[in-house]
Length: 493
Image 1 (cartoon, rainbow, N blue to C red):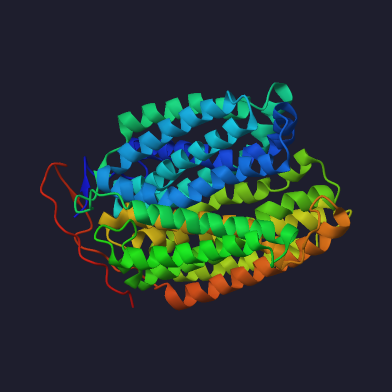
Image 2: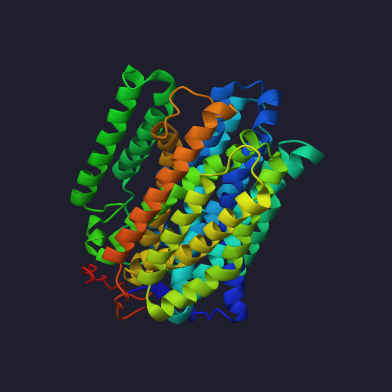
């Protein structure tokens, strides 16, 4: 049984718009911060006297803590209240952002960035779980689609916002601006977002699972990142990769036997849920490679300015804003299998087109068509994929489902940045050298296209035409009512 205060909200109602505002703004804090910092890295390095490793960890510290702990954030929301954990995450993120803006040296900034990632891990799954638990079942696809499209604007605005703030003043502004935005989210969330939780969730925190998952992801990321420079035979690379693999295997084994697991492994008996997360891993790994190298290639190989390369991706964002909610509504009517199969195939075509962008590429004939096709594919895919990952399980598992899907997406993107350049033949090369980057970029786009096709195949094979309803869908009642143990999800045909 799912306990939610108040009645389910409708997408077209004022209450629904307030819930969307809180979740979109909250998620945008994390989305923007994952992109905006890259623009300010040169200025940060000069101001704080940091070497390349310090700047790398300024980015990776945030990404690792976010990816490692986002599953815990979803689990805590199920146990103690999605709204409560979401608002705690927003407040935590604001305090960490203030610390980032006041950092006197690179070590303090890295530590503050790690704290930011923790806040992001609390608020990100909470936003999706709130949508799943707050909106009426017939409106959830539209709500998640709108969240995807509007949230995409936040991610796309990151490079523009960062460049503008650095130009007009100081790199510290990119962190300090989060504080008033977070205050607005806290006000809207406290006043307008209903609380929901799973009363059957265990109250104990799975410390062993949290540690094993974080060490596993960190080990793999560090090992693959160090591979090009040190080589596969380097003891540090071997040890890091072995530690990562061993920790992740240990995580799975422990979660299967733990009395109160952070990740109930039994939820993967649900074929639709497992399929959606496999598709998420493949497609978001491809997205990670695209968004990492596309803008760099435009600047280094094609000769675009930073501003022009940032503007190049705006059509993708615009299409997601216009079409994501409609795609979510369409998937609600016809089922998620067709959109989740067609979307990655469209993206694969776009990536083949992107692979041809080289020296002297014309924006109107070479870049824009590929960007438009890519935006159409993502608009078709993202909302049905997210809705399936959340809707395949009972509502009582909304927080866990959101946490798993976020963790899978974040981990896929993080590992893609470490692995794809290596797989594309970078070796010990330099991403700022046009002659070395061009073949790496071309090969990476083709690898990403293959990942998209594989995601489409898995969606067709594993995602059902219709998700199984889970009666009772949800009970709206006094949050002090006695809990009812939810049934273990069955395999979906």
